[in-house]
Length: 140
Image (cartoon, rainbow, N blue to C red):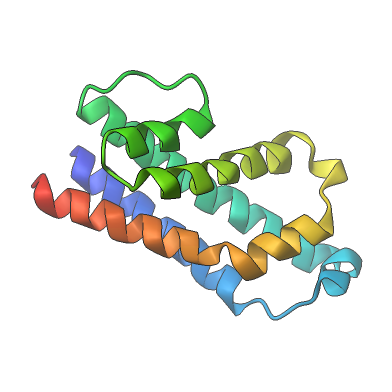
């Protein structure tokens, strides 16, 4: 499978996760009390962020950029190389930290932070997808 096809497959799955997250109509209290809802929200965030990281890693490898030290650096590298705007890369790099918390500190996720990401950060995925579509268009 070509790199562009892998990127598109990851983008489509990321957008599926984000579509679910956008459909959630819950307050932070409901996320705190409804275990199944909270689990679904956490998992879809984790998968959406991992898709974005995977896309970044594919582009970094494909274009021969320096290998990032960590997931946060994937987005920062994309910013430095002009794939995404640098200020957006800084903002998006916070998602990598959120992903690490979801994966490694799962027993202690603050539902307030989860709710903030749910209400304030979903557009980041749409913006990321838009920049990646521009990249694919320019490099095909």
